[in-house]
Image 1 (tube, one colour):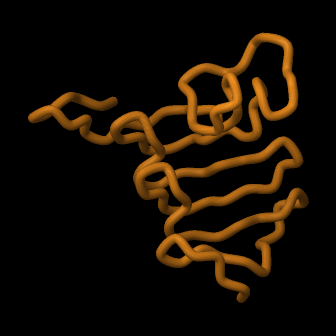
Image 2 (image 1 turned 90 degrees about the vertical axis):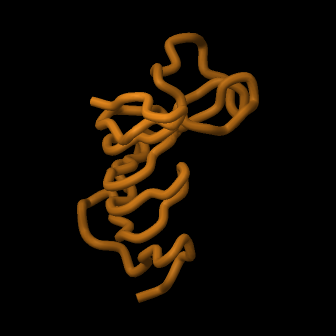
Amino acid sequence: MGSLIGGDWELMWGVMYKGFRNGDYSYYKEKWKGVESKQKNEDKGIYEGEIKNGLPDGQGKLTFPDDSGFIGEFKNGEKWNGTRFEPNGKISSWKVVNGKNIKQ
């Protein structure tokens, strides 16, 4: 899956949860299992893909509770190059290029 080489984690494939834990919005290894409270503790999405140093990095897919999301390349936990999709699965009119949202 992944390995530590020279102090850096090499890529691995996995699942992460994007959301709030004690008010901090980030990626987490485990799904929130407690009581959800807006902006404090809740999951906002699920990431499936390559992970490096504990963050999405490489090819992956981020899906939100309404089934919309993003598929493509991530860099240091940020959407980098790829396509957004709507809840019905259709391609959105927005894409991400070098970390910036672009209207198609």
